[in-house]
Length: 91
Image (cartoon, rainbow, N blue to C red; front, side, top):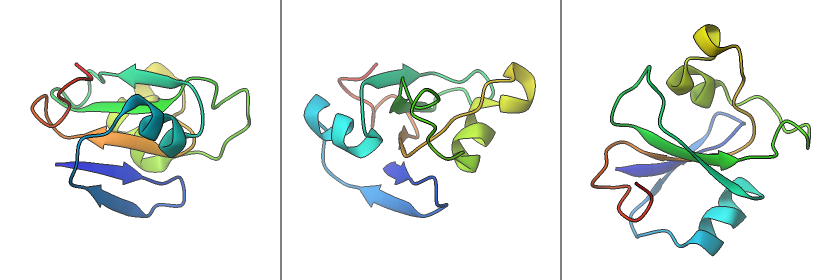
């Protein structure tokens, strides 16, 4: 399953493959792929310049990433793939 995890806390399912252009629109900038060690198998895409743009904290992204371990927050809207099969083309 894939979904958008908004910084507001809202989640929106995605049922079709996502192109680079669509991913850039969703995250609001340059796409950075993150493979968090805290949640193996999960892959998410975020705005690589989100902190520089002062985007709001994404609590769900921080939980997936393990911000409490790494110290780096996840900000802005993110695109989450729950497994490698769903992340086809992004792995």
